[in-house]
Amino acid sequence: MRTYILKKESIVKAPLAAVWKFFSDPHNLVKITPDYMKFRVLKCPDVEEVYDGMLIEYRVRPILNYPMKWITLIKKVAPLQYFTDTQISGPYALWEHTHFFEETAEGTKMIDEVKYALPLGVLGTIAHTLFVKKQLEGIFNYREKVIDAIFKN
Image (cartoon, rainbow, N blue to C red; front, side):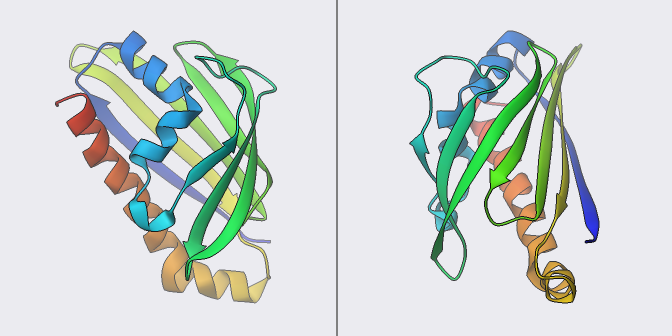
């Protein structure tokens, strides 16, 4: 199984506490995911902030409008610093996404680091080359634009 890493860094011109609050609410993921993914939160505890051990269930349509269930576990939470969501079941063979937050003079530095792998061996490698890598980069670029608009960067 080949593992890939996607890393995206950006500055949000807003205080750390506000950025953390937005990203700690799993329901906000719908707001920053492209519409074509038809991303929906199916099950999520009714809390204002992620916590270690939290399970979240989503439905997403990443390929040819085919619905897939995606269940993530929130772990390694350090408030106002970082948290990691790990796929329990879903479209990837491996998905570990760590969200880092750091207050700077310009605003809040956010770093997304995603370690992922695809199923299906060589077919997964081909799919990664043909469209998965570009799709993930596009999703994170879209998020950056939407976040800028939300926080009026």
